[in-house]
Length: 144
Image (cartoon, rainbow, N blue to C red):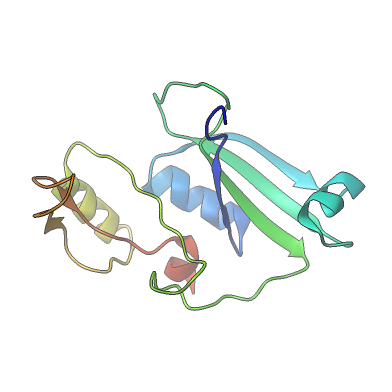
């Protein structure tokens, strides 16, 4: 293995998700494209697949293997179904970000309408003891 190319989330509305990740979480949009071709259909395994994709990067993050860190995918065809967004469900994922002032970011995001699982919590055990963290719901929980 050479490294991680990117991580990806499937979203229900690409434009709304790009706004969420750029405006609220401060990612930079690198590229957007529509994928309605035979190659994509073979890769994802859906014979009629039609996707819109956005690639985003963390500002200032050193670039290595890829131009982006996050890929957002909106399946126009086939259309997916929203499920339970709680993190205890198999198949759910999370993205961990590092910030300088968690309390300030928490307040800023809260004011922006982001829903959190809790308030920021001190990490009292494990390799990250002494820090603090909070989980937030992603774009699709915010709009639905």
